[in-house]
Image (tube, rainbow, N blue to C red; front, side, top):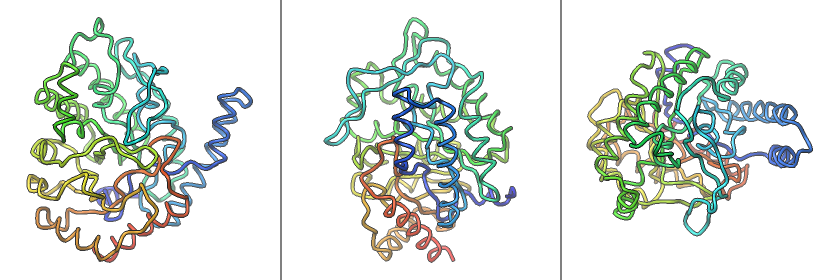
Amino acid sequence: MTNSTIKRAPFKGDHVGSFLRPERLKEARRQKAEGTISQEELRRIEDEEITKLVAKQKEAGLPAVTDGDFRRSWWHFDFLEGLDGVEGYDKEKGLPFDGVETKARGVKVTGKVGFTDHPAIRDFRFLKEIAGDSVAKLTIPSPNMLLFRADIDREIYPTDEALLADLVDAYQGFIQRIYEEGCRYLQLDDTAWASFFSEKGREAIAAEGRDPERAATLCARSINESIAERPEDLLITMHICRGNFRSTFMTTGSYEALSETIFDGLDVDGLFLEFDDERSGGFEPLRHVNRPDLSVVLGLITSKTGELEDPDRIKARILEASDYVPMSQLCLSPQCGFASTEEGNVISEEEQWAKIRHVLEIAGEVWR
């Protein structure tokens, strides 16, 4: 893997990162929770299943490989719990999705937020070792997920601005450390932006005592300040999603409400954008992409169902998007991962890999 390889990322055919957990891994996690196997035994099984997953990603033709979130129960909570001053806990209710609710779990800020060490460092080290010539891609929740999803002790942090200062320092510390481990492709996953896309979402933000416009500005600051000190050859992308749990969603709405902030105000190298159905609106907000160096990854292939999209329809939509962003800056991916939580989407493993191959085949035809 060379620096020129990384500079081509996000790749014309790419993916968001998470994959369906194999039954052997799910059973091992149950056994660990019941106390019938040790943490060391669970990790050995995780290592073996991740090794198999990486091999499958390579076989499918993906230039970048992830560990599929195989060591996580959640795409965000597990990572956030690894920061200093953050704890996980069992809540009374889960998160509401369309017709279904997640497990009752959450995170809370109980002390000064910081970065000393983190389990993800060791996890990435293993991925890097087995990735070989492929790009080892790390996905983590954006700092906005702590700002918007954690219960915050207001005696410690009376305001979001006070928390932001320490949160930025923590992310800067983690990013520098993961870079030293060899990471050159980092993705920040963020569902907080979707809260601003609908009137209902903005009302919910206001109900929490936050001014939506000020909160949006804070979200942009948290991203830009967290990545401001990144090394020049570390590529950072962001995945924006409206929720993904058991093939359902949490929010709806076009990018239009925050299009200028997202497309012209964030200092990331690429954006993975959900565009698989009408919930995301049209491509018109992309008119605010004013940077020739920003890659826009169109999430036109859904990860929520197994049916393969009409390739001609996908090609037509890519062409439609090129009315707003040059074709050279566009890429293709599934709209989200296949398992944002360990439960996974309602899709088979065979269908999952068919989706990945579908992305790569279409991308190969569009960008010859």
